[in-house]
Image (cartoon, rainbow, N blue to C red):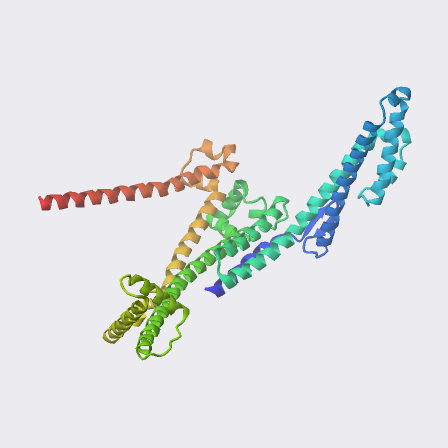
Length: 437
């Protein structure tokens, strides 16, 4: 089962990340998302964004201090003083920006304009620089996230295979799905066939149904990369949960067997210690045996401490004789106590789990095909022509209309089963009362 989980993890990882386009376009440049240099580029742009914010904050703080310290009388004596002060501030900030390696060379931009026009565009240039730095930082983090999610999926997947914990299973599954979702946000996912070129819209599926029939559309649907990616991830999570379930059942049975074996060893140790104490020999007990002996001695509330210990050891000798007698009379008693026979067979457990998994996979495939062939399903169930040819059929909400009967069928089945069960119980209860009367 562990080997199956390894294969499905590799299949899910390969199918998802192979369907993500490795080259993504940003500002007329192609970025390779698996480039190791993205880490340094992202760190540099984050540092650049922080410097932009700090420069703007320092400039605002400086201007606030200057305006609060210079007396307002100077503005009245020389109205152009404020203009010169703002112009000086712009020059200082431009020099600071050049030192901080802003992505836009502000010094060259400002040099192209006369000084009297600097005050007109300087505030907008400041925010343009800030928005550029923020945008480049966000896109760098976006490209780097693919590498982070891929490494996270590998690490958590390996940890799951080694420790078989549910948290590692879902962590690897979420990492794989998140990378696919990130690529789908910007349209950098290889959908493959024409059936999936527009994300399986009803119009495209209707074309497949019209020219290839239901079997052709279903074949195209099952052969699409999108379906393979979803199926591989679903099978991985199913096999992982099955592995966790089997390991928990087997581990509980083995832990209980080990616990019984330890208890039997403690009983044998205390029974042997009883004979040695009667011979006035010094006895060294294990930690578990000492704790059990102290607890048994505490239960002898009407005896002295030494006498209580002797009585407890005598009881252990009687218990050992009883256990040995049980082992002689019942050959399989040791296996029964160790719960080795009580543990479920791994083969039968896997067989029943695989049967249920196969039914769920078929159900998921059928529901997925229904969701992507809403128009075809409506035609098959005999929906009115006005409904089939309406614009609402092309909307995603039409899938909810098809899924509502399926969802409510489970609750309806549960209600029917509950009603029948209660009715049978009432009939049995009335029958018992009639027989007793």
